[in-house]
Length: 216
Image: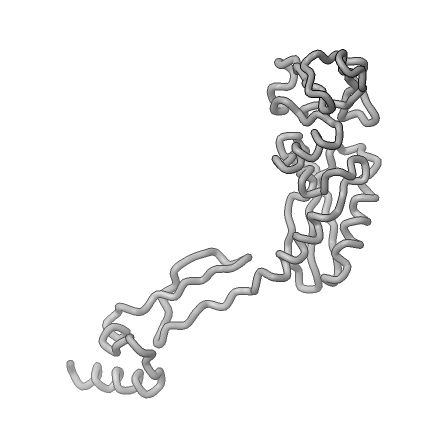
């Protein structure tokens, strides 16, 4: 090692005390320790840090996780058995400088409950500061976004969930089972139900009417 390199190494040793297990030869010779960085808003990566190894700071996830839990409890005003998250209306949750931002996609552009949904979201997340609700209408909402938990809750509520994807809807005639007695002998009474996104059916066995959530 020449005199210049020895002086640089001595300076580095004095300025950056070495952590246990990391030798000066490793650090100065270009084999720097690897520090992993994880966290929301921070891409998981391996970062090569200067002497000594430092962990890249990232914001803790607890705040967004708590906000997400609150959103999971906000019911859809038209179908209170499922939450907005389970229905697929909540597309994104972001942390802002003064609070949080929630991106929503209504089930269809003329949905009369849009303003009520936005108000319910603001009320549920009020403790997190300023709540910004952004309506994102493209891409359009699809029944494919309903979660498996949401589909199960619809069935238990008496509404048969979509039986095919939105792309298959015009090619497949559904054969529905009654959500009450599980009979396969059912018939459609009307192409529309309590809302435009549902149709009205009846079970021939138990004679009970029920609704079908049409795939779109």
